Length: 510
Image (cartoon, rainbow, N blue to C red; front, side):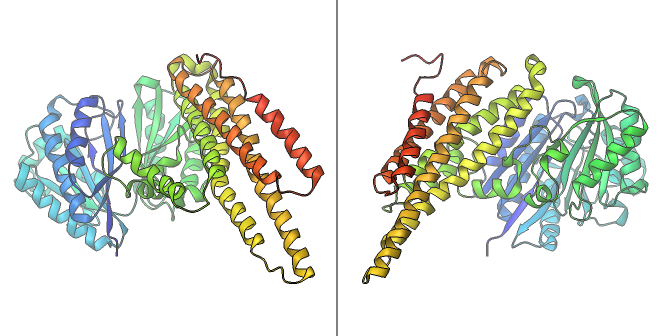
């Protein structure tokens, strides 16, 4: 049985990209561990990294990350909006597949002892791994943060670590290690810079103050954006779904005359959580399907921990192998659909990144709308990859029908005609959708970041190729279709679509 555990170490550095990269590189060196995600926030001055793999390999990767963070991060010189007590602040282990919470508790205890033995950094255990009931909650352990705990631990035995000497590491502080269920880090931004309002809302919604079960929350000052944020940890999204949290924050904000300007997921989120709550309803900022845990696992476990070409090549390899296999499907129609989906995905990327830039702020609403349209188109074209292959298989099945008697011959001919018309209709739908993407990408040029012009133009070339490739598949099926009227309509529309994308996109030189 496959054994998969997730680990989400939080490091107290979100401003120096070189330091974060060095920490991540140290963890990437461990074979059999997959880097699923990394998020850095300058206001919080914190980075969250998501690893997955076999338990022992993930444990070793986490340990190497702790060691590198201790080398690079000096908490005596650190400041940020997010509470912290360690260079590596928290290291939770989460069961994914073939692993129980008890297994993760044992793993947390092993890693905690190793952190002390290797780096002389004291360790506290929390959540399911807590050795005392009052230490199940992270905020109880982290009270006073690095500066306060550094002093109190010397004189108060009750604050002593679970592993190591009763004093903090001079620059790396202490690390909290634990085991828990999947946690969703979810932030809601308010249209006010008033931090007190965010703090009051956080206090009202968190369970420790009588609010929602499985919710931890606090107010954070986003100085760079001149906004206040309610930063939330949702420890059981099935018991307290994310939309319930959103609605309660919305109601609380209205009491203070403010509103929500957006929300965001930090790190990954289980597919089930998104299924429970509509993306549009939550007003998620910059959400991508790649943030879904199951999607990233599926993409990454076929490759390596590297974030470079090896991982991307591994993601593409299964489809390339399927096309290269000595079978008729998937073939040109599926490849054309993929080309269109890639063009749409490039458009979604450009729109999502451009709307974050101050220079494009005037177009934020239009870019948000465009990103949603491109996402819808990419999803539809990705589905067409399978639909095209299935339609070809239907044609082959029809040709294999018995034809011993006149009645069987008639039924076979009718089935072949239906299958051929279906096989022609699927690529025509792809051509229509890809032509629309071609146009939408052209409209995006004037409102997106100029630095992403090449991405738009590559997207237009891909969508134009999708149109042409799909129409080749329409044509091959029309050759055998008996219904002259159907074939004529198809040919007329194909000619129009080809003419639509016949010109090379503006700005591209021959």
